[in-house]
Image (tube, one colour):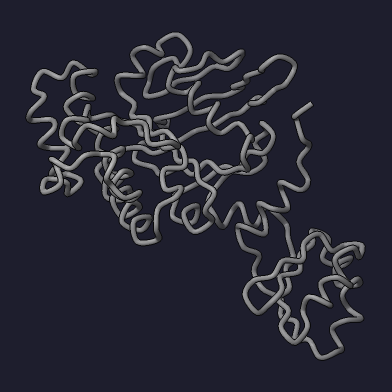
Amino acid sequence: METFAIDVRGVTKKFGTRTVVNDIAMQVRPGEIYGFLGPNGSGKTTFLRMLCGLLKPDAGSGNCLGLDFRRESSEIKKRVGYMTQKFSFYEDLTIEENLDFIARLYQMPSRQDAVQKSLERLGMVERRKQLAGTLSGGWKQRLALAACLIHEPQLLLLDEPTAGVDPKARRDFWEEIHKLAAEGLTFLITTHYMDEASRCHRLAYIAYGNLLAHGTVAEVVKAGGLTTWEVSGENLAVLADKIRSLPGVEQVVAFGTALHVSGRDAAKLQTAVGPFMAGAYRWTQIESGLEDVFISLMDSAKDNFS
């Protein structure tokens, strides 16, 4: 029987009459980078907080790191690192002082060694005396990751960890993630970036509390069942206005100097756009991308706000 770092089912959370996480199941293998995607307010952060014991679920069962995620949450917390969306360290303390504080919280027997190891692991030795409040977004992100790792966790829950950092810092961050995963560390990462989703081993998509798709990138794209045409030519905005409301046309999106026109019923889509293919525009059928699929899934999902 395969062993999972995360193996939960039926996870549900309500706030009043609103169900923000609805009957979610998830299995994540040890050493896997698992992407968790969805629009703002979809329930991603709530799910993460339940998984690591910061929030009590209303229903659900299963294990996290071999422990019952409902009954043994206090033990799970010791084995999990959680990186929040917002930078949450003391800006008037140095990098080293922040890490020492986190080591104290975890009651680590050899704090100095743990801090030194964290500084070396994330390349922060030369900046150890720099105040956290003076760091760039990328270096704050690196400090947050170092703090998550200081107690040697088995699982990292990262909630939109690269929001607001530049492309190079994002790339460097993901290189570090893959290096740590190769060493056996497991990741559950929420993100809005499609390029980052493509870097995950597997992923899941949640909208309005419901799990709508999961699997590898290729599996999710295939399951989306979208047909997509790329259109190039002059005055694409005029064409977009003409076809956007036609039966079978679900998406008309500008991508640089081209349009992506998508629909789940290939025949219906072909019938709708067929009259426009004989003109000055060039139509090429292409493979649908993650963004095309996720927008289609979100458009078809039912809002749970009320």
